[in-house]
Amino acid sequence: MAEETIQYFNSVEAARILGVNVSTIKRWTDSGELACVRTPGGHRKFLPEHLNDFMEKHRSKKTRLPLLSFEESADVEITAHVFRDDLPFLQKYLLEQALSGNIERILFLFSVMISKPKPLYEIYDQLVTPVMHRLGDFWEAEKLSVVEEHLASQTIRLAQDRLQAIIAIPREKIGTVLCMNLSNELHDIPLQMVGYLLEKRGFRVMFSGQMTPYLGLEEILARLSVERIYISITIVQDPVSTRQGLQQISRMATEKRIQIFIGGQGVDRLEMELPEGVTRLMTFREVAER
Ligand code: B12
Figure 1 (cartoon, rainbow, N blue to C red):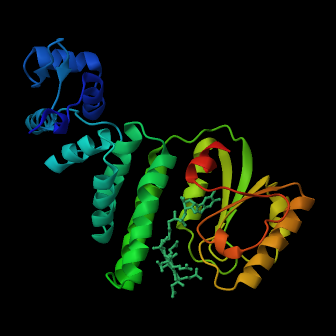
Figure 2 (cartoon, rainbow, N blue to C red):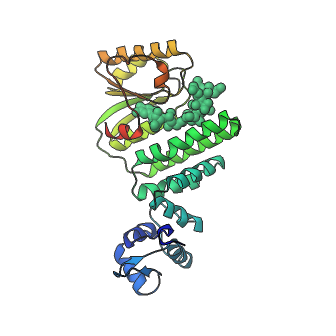
Figure 3 (cartoon, rainbow, N blue to C red):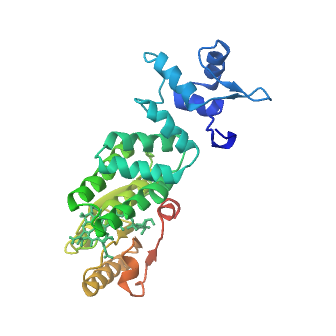
């Protein structure tokens, strides 16, 4: 194998994967318990097999990151792809696991990425979004049945829910937001991703989700002291009523000085100038930063 195709972990990475301190890694390599290769400069380098063999030998030892549980030898391979930032591989893996309904494997993949550490918005922008798009393309080309598409997208959603349950959310809140879809929209997975990013930033997140009716919305905004509204638009089946909906919400929000942020693949299909107080965001990264 050519040198550049070999994935080595350094001591810090090996420590993170095994859930121990770097000094422990040094001790284990010095005693020969954990195999490694040495660079000419004397640094320790680890192959996935080294870590895997160690874990096999010491199943009873606490050899796991709090978030992770290595179950199969494939797990170390996946971890290597995460460290290499091998997105084509990771996207393919996510797609396969989603189509097999394998929530746990996806949660494992997400947890390794979070521990790398990779920001949550990058997981959403670089991994989940392209895979969801691919699912849609396959479905449109009739390479997937509707039920397969449902199973895959809901599997990804459930893995995201479980990931959110194990990542740190600030206790101190910096504001209150409402995440909603317009009244004809069923696509609420991107909206949920927006909500999770805002929750991670420290916002108190209210989520009214799919097909939010506009009747009574004004009362809710006042009662919950909402400061920002995030709207995700995927489908625009009736452009006139969708535009009217957005205008109606923007009127309510302007009166109450609420900011509105919109995003999603449907926004372009609205073909309208955005009403006052409405900002368009393009990526999940922007949700995490603005
Ligand atoms: C999963 C899915 C469903 C699920 C939704 C489950 C759920 N609870 O969300 C179900 C099965 C319910 C569904 C239903 C339908 N779907 Co559908 N669906 C999809 C699929 C595969 C994934 C959607 C998704 O989550 N994408 C992932 C997100 C993250 O990607 P994104 O929207 O591009 O978002 C990016 C940005 O826009 C941004 N973003 C998104 N939202 C927001 C919000 C904010 C605030 C910000 C800042 C950023 C942001 O971040 C992302 C990064 O760039 C898509 C395929 C696709 N291309 O997306 C089809 C797709 C959207 N569906 C489609 C269709 C046709 C339908 C149905 C009409 C099918 C039918 N005949 O019944 C219905 C519509 C029902 C309705 N009224 O809403 C078409 C839409 C075609 C079109 N151009 O209008 C698509 C494109 C499939 C296809 N290739 O034909 N669908």
